[in-house]
Length: 104
Image (cartoon, rainbow, N blue to C red; front, side):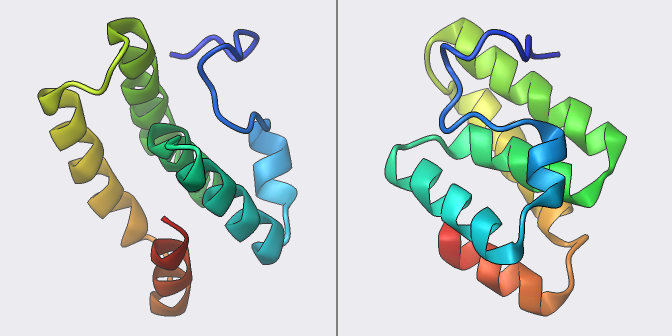
């Protein structure tokens, strides 16, 4: 689990509550800002927040924590992140999948 008080490795830091309450445009802007800054693992966490799926949130936070602990995204962690992203994105309606994917 990530330490949410330690923001030294997070991209544009927002809380789960803030992400859930964003408009779709604000959410897309967050994803685009993070993508431009190479904060892809943070984006996966934020996307999971939008689903409310506690298992995926925990899994994504653990991926981000490992990324931070390792100092880089290892091949295994990258593969795991991709697998979780594929599960995650399929929880959204097709239109939302498309718009989220366009932001990454």
